[in-house]
Length: 134
Ligand code: FES
Ligand code: FES
Image (cartoon, rainbow, N blue to C red):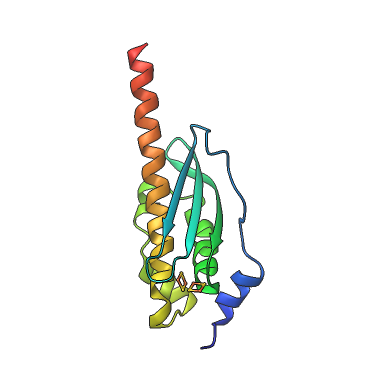
């Protein structure tokens, strides 16, 4: 199976590899795994107000999973939380021209974005509760 040029580009020059401070209250972390193959993706976002200002990822997986997460970090930057939640794996599939057997790799990226946003929202809710309890 041949990887598309865009997959190879992201695979060879992944954008935004790394980690953000998991403990920071402005950071949301999503860790998801693919039952199909055991690959794992971690995606983190840094949020200012309602907007994602930074994103990082680490993926232990195939080239398509790495490319999907690299693309996902590029796409979420500058988006609001709701806009990021609306990114769907089919957009990733189209952008990277993923073949059917690699669709679950893009699902991983969509799930990782959602997990990171939800983690951030849960954190913010707890912080708000703590502040109102003071
Ligand atoms: Fe081997 Fe994903 S199945 S890297
Ligand atoms: Fe399993 Fe790509 S994430 S093969």
